[in-house]
Image (cartoon, rainbow, N blue to C red; front, side, top):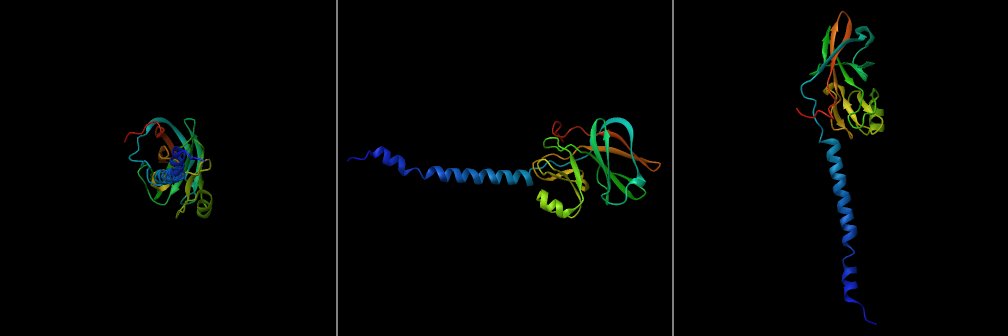
Length: 187
């Protein structure tokens, strides 16, 4: 019984398929790891679009670092956070620092929440931090309020949009909002 040499030659190269599949899988995993940890856009200088002046919260509503108040500004859910140190978009009043961010995740627009328990952040979001962070429960992106809402881990590549705040007479006011960074990527 004669064996067709072309079939034998073809069968001798079957090893290429699993090797190529394995290399492709590792390449995809390396690219994904790079994307979720390194390829993040930094917040930069604030570029607020002016909006109506709106009361957000009384300064007395905040009880120290990383306490927060949720509010809506120009139909955008937002969160104001008291910070331990100032950042580029924060406002300082009486030695205290406040910043506000859109609560719309820059990955797919799911709402972000302040995750105060750093152990919960490590277990649920797979990100270890020294202080509370803003986290998206849809795809587990993590944003640092101290770094201007920068995306520090997860699928979101862009920082959260920031809200311009002013402090006056014991009250925080919003008066502008950055455009959605997914749409406006220059700078």
